[in-house]
Image 1: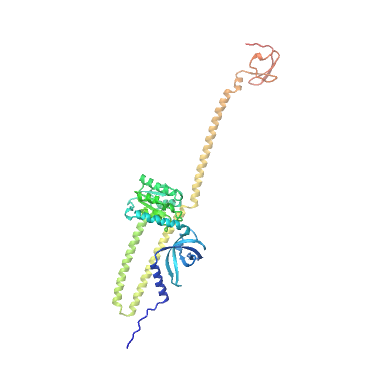
Image 2 (image 1 turned 90 degrees about the vertical axis):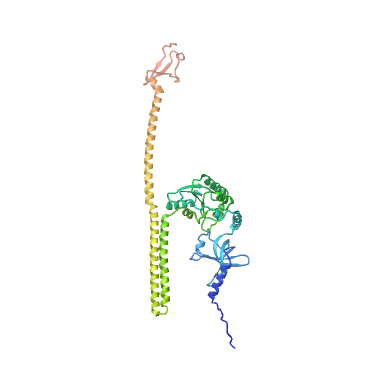
Length: 448
């Protein structure tokens, strides 16, 4: 009697951990987890490692540098946080863990629930429907920007448009992007810009911030204003990970204000570069495909031949890979040189010597204007002084004395004598002439 032992499928540890990890990642969607941080570590690599716990349990967490770089704060032990994460397994140690994709303070949880409720309600009303969204015009000549006139977003947008599309006409509609009345201002300004109809497309923008900072763009009044706007709206609010109700209602969503400006502005240099890159990739792909088919054919024909021929084929493949690597390195060096040249041009434009020269010239202009102003003021004062002197000379008593008249005063009390009846014979009087005085005695009085 022959018995056969069935083959046993024996797992290695690495295989077991790998398949367990795949099972965990496929079984759980991206989910939200809330808890308290402990055992927080921040090594030189820039990644974050910590435990997230509640009253009865804890779990290990990791947040890699490309994700934690956009978190607005650095957490510490004892902080209550809310993270959006995926479930995983660290294969090297067989350790269950979660990988954080987004982190915010736990206090944002109330706002997050309000956000989800509003999102669900507006979605049921059809405000997010794709068929309602408008395409961008093929020719954009005028661009409206609804944002804070003093924020970083408007500077980024204007800089990007000046670099990519300097001929565009830009109209800024200033609003407050944070605060109690900001949502009403934003909604009213969207309606105003739509009624004026002086632009081809509108950009609704704001810089990054916490969920509370961005809440003005999660208000229903703003969503309704965007929905009823007849012009296409590109929403560039916050950073790449920030999703607002305005993003979902808008015709287009950009990750940042700069990305919104790039979306509405054509860049011919970029298109030409992309076309050349696609052409190069197509040529290389055809060559690789042809080489692959040729190699496959050669391998099929020659697979039973001497191993030396196989070695020759491997050597040829190594040469091909070396050639491709060299081309890739050369291309990367060329791109770095282009970037370096662009940065050098920007640096030269901001050189202090140019700024100092401009300020010196401005100072010289102001000095000349000041000297001219002083001379003009002095001349005007001199003319005024001469005129006043002539007026004073006309009404001066000295002018009357110069014509031969005299002023008579009593010698005892220096009272001016206006009538002869006030004097008696023997009184002493003084007569003031144009030049000098005379002392007189009254000898005779005649009354007219």
